[in-house]
Image (cartoon, rainbow, N blue to C red; front, side, top):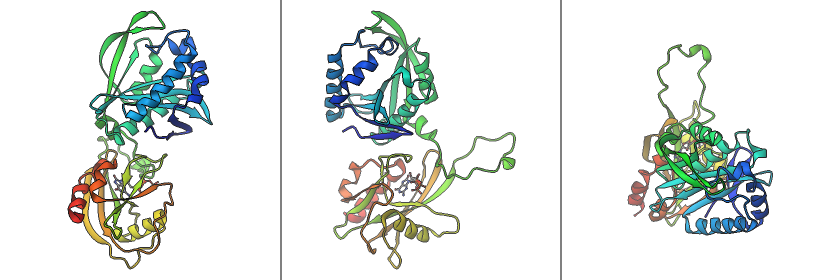
Length: 334
Ligand SMILES: Nc1nc2c([nH]c(=O)n2[C@@H]2O[C@H](COP(=O)(O)OP(=O)(O)OP(=O)(O)O)[C@@H](O)[C@H]2O)c(=O)[nH]1
């Protein structure tokens, strides 16, 4: 199903039948429709209804995810990812009402949908195309890191003619490696920065995490909430080790802050660790197995919590660095 995503002040959500009048009003505008290849002008009202219906069907099938772009409850446009048959790549498409142009909103919405597609859906690449005279759209795609892979031509129904288009592509690695580092990354003082700098090497981030196990041997996973980097991915509860903290002290603090649990006096059994390139930083993450604590896990930071059997771990999209942990936990708990 198509989830609700947040991007700055925008809410991206599945289209509803009630959106039809607004969709019709906004698309039935020459400056919008002339850039959308398949739509006629004028754009009839029943096409809006049919299209919304088809997006709901696609979403249920998992073949495409279309989102209404909304701000303060008003519809501004739409953005979608249509997946390839093998579900390994997605084709990005969008339109925005002219009243919302010039504010960077398309870039904001597209960045969030792309991140979601590459992380939660685990797509390998995103493709896009735009008419060669659609300078605004090509600028957005370039800003997002898309590179041109070729040209073609397509019939634009509204214009009644074939138009040259640019084909573009964004591989998963490009986007994830260029993702912004966590906001709290220390910024070196200006005077410490040499004039001729080497490209910065990823710094190592020390994060501590827990595999909390319940009496049935299930593991507690937490889904990262909207608004955070990698929102929608499931991870082991934990967080960054602060200066002057041991990993164990950090874990006890994080479990209290994130889940309201008291781990003092519990056995924190070191299990394994992750040492992986995580894009903007190198992640070093000791994972502890914890079987006893005081309190009931309560999501205190907007996360969604779930107790998951080891055999089901593969069904929960997790950050790349966590993937090697899955077979190790399955072996431990098998
Ligand atoms: N806790 C946890 N973090 C993980 C896991 N896998 C993984 O890549 N990470 C990364 O390690 C970092 C954890 O830092 P964090 O939890 O303190 O920070 P955060 O990004 O949630 O933001 P915050 O500082 O606002 O809480 C995040 O960048 C997170 O994506 C995992 O299984 N558990």
